[in-house]
Length: 209
Ligand SMILES: NC(=O)c1ccc[n+]([C@@H]2O[C@H](COP(=O)([O-])OP(=O)(O)OC[C@H]3O[C@@H](n4cnc5c(N)ncnc54)[C@H](OP(=O)(O)O)[C@@H]3O)[C@@H](O)[C@H]2O)c1
Image (cartoon, rainbow, N blue to C red; front, side, top):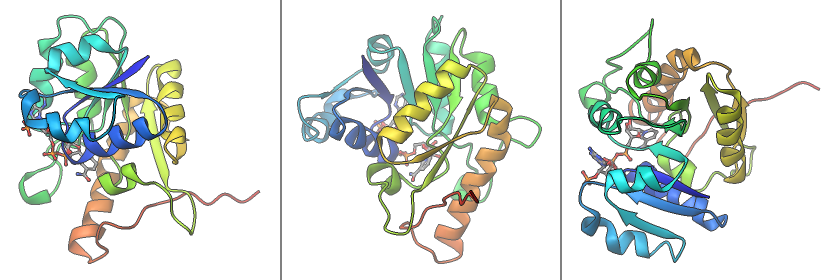
């Protein structure tokens, strides 16, 4: 079973690299596959790039790693998602990373679920920087990856993928928790770019007992 990733930019490439290094097969979908053919071939034989609709058709798990402005058109370009797991790694960012354009009584993830017909939407891979998705290992602990979605099986599958690439997968329960995960992404962005942390840090969960 392959994993399709729509978008081959910072997040798409980081996840594609991490998954292929763990032996998974990845199909990237982008508007202009030729633009990414060299970068994708560098990931090895287990990665290929095609157009967006062909990539959606190729896998039963599809990760959206595109600018939020592209989400609606992609969701609606597929007449029926036929129960595919649709992982929303996007954040509805305002220009200049100045905040979010959706929330707090709904979320980008929930809005996606409303328009992606028969998709099992899971919110994940949106709360940390792309560098952490490419290389999750830290000396001081295991970075967390919160995951939410209304379908428990879909959520578990995505948590397993997060675990596979080195994250402490955190079960956030139903998709409405995306209302918390999208602002949480802003916490990472705020620290990285406004508070001088830079991009080489991650959040982790400490547990007593
Ligand atoms: N960067 C991060 O550290 C980070 C972390 C967590 C979440 N996110 C979120 O993840 C998403 C992607 O961020 P990014 O930094 O990876 O963006 P990016 O580097 O700009 O990459 C976006 C990718 O999406 C493709 N794309 C654009 N419109 C498309 C469409 N209609 N159909 C298919 N593919 C399309 C682009 O292709 P072209 O090059 O051909 O335009 C490009 O490959 C954003 O929503 C962002 O908020 C980012």
